[in-house]
Length: 154
Image (cartoon, rainbow, N blue to C red; front, top):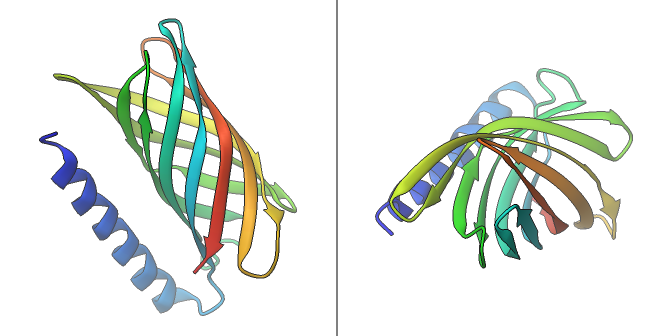
């Protein structure tokens, strides 16, 4: 996996940049690191999906807006690694909708995609939440990614 080092560098740069930007603009910013477990379905079949994500509310812009990064690995027929940078909007309470560009890496190919989705943050306590998610990855076709994210506040 030649692109793994690029993914790790992109995640590190984004997290570092996001934390510094939010420190500079607002002390009230909150972030979350999450582990995703779900299923990806496409015309070619379906398979287990594992992922990592990071989200930071951008309170300097507005308390309803956030930005993040995700990294998903799909196993099975729609096999591949997806990396993206969505923008989150919280229109009501714990409901979130998001949209952002991404890239899907498969054996010997890279495909640009747009991920759109929605979720609902269920607060377990002050540190943890559980979020059911439904996502659509739109490229030459649509792949559906749905599951649960266990998130920890940072």
